[in-house]
Picture (cartoon, rainbow, N blue to C red):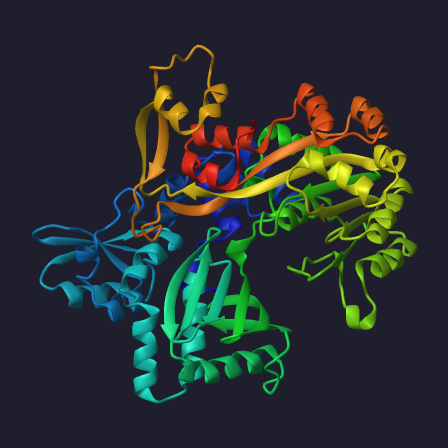
Length: 558
């Protein structure tokens, strides 16, 4: 455990919150029960249930240190203020200039108990007096980003040093990807140079560039780390890197593909921030969470998640499996690839070279009589039929499926060759989902806009507000201004928007008739299903995401 984390564990937080009266014993017992059952941090539950806030958590930890709390979210320092402490000193001491007065400076840090901290700060600010306050580690990290120069600038310094150029550049790229919470890193060779781009919250941003002459050695470095062939330049290759440096750890899934201008590399970053695996992290409403919990509690049946690549389908299924992952339950998965290793679950990697396909792997799994099965994706008739039969013969089966919405899944599975009577008997819930960027809480602001103005941009939008609101009435929506915390994008993090279809007796009868997508949706709608856009609108109204972002990922129904 590092110095900055010495108070940041569930047992100490639990003791502080109860002792200081922030949380009742009954609330804490509920939190502890949920935390143990769902394998999530105690603080995650307390924060998501809004029993405590981030500020209250910070205040509790500050009290444990015997200092005051400095809220860097509400009082985010300017760059000029930040740079009054030199980069080396700020990063070594993890110290931020929070406030400055004539005779006193107030410093925020995430470890007030660090040895020699006061002595070092007194030297920096003599003859003024120094007051130390506590801030959450994640907030300190957000401010320290100010000190980082661009990747291209750092590349140039590494090249000028003439020492370990390729290892240095690769490390800088990975460290920045983790710092900016990127889900993917793209190395894209072009005629003149190689562009490095990060995918952050689902959107690609250019991070830096390198010349083709240096890219060759960078590419070889990546291949060595990934245990891939250096001499292979005209075939695709897949590998993995385990990165660990300066207390930061991540697994990177590496994909290399030849293009006309050279070999393109993509890292899929499998770091802690990319996944939460708890329902509270997904953006599910209480109604949707209840539907999942009810389906997962049944002894057999099939639950499908649908959506395009990168819409969070696997993460949703992992969150469900985590709730089911108990000593008396046997869970086995067949995945391509295994995204994250979960203790207590038997995970099988698809390997076509060894004839371990989804279909063959699933056959073997069924013969081993598990309670719960996860099929990474239903891609063909054979896998679909085995999955449906497994769900019919006493197994609880989860899988992903490529379809634009929940209702489309049923006709597509029937077209694939699955018998309607089997689908009718096994399907429990179909989930369609997308990921939308969340408005940055540090720079979120409200704006007033008339319904008339909205309707002029999106004609269908009128249907999603109260009938009592007139065309001239003003409503409040939210946006992000852009700040240092969100890298001036106005967004930070992502949330899911969902469409659920629960298979009711009426839908079971309809499936037997080989229905169209429209027929399925009409019945599901009558029985309470809401579209992706409707779920997204609720998040727009609550200030979680913006209307522009919702329209980027989901279309309003006609």
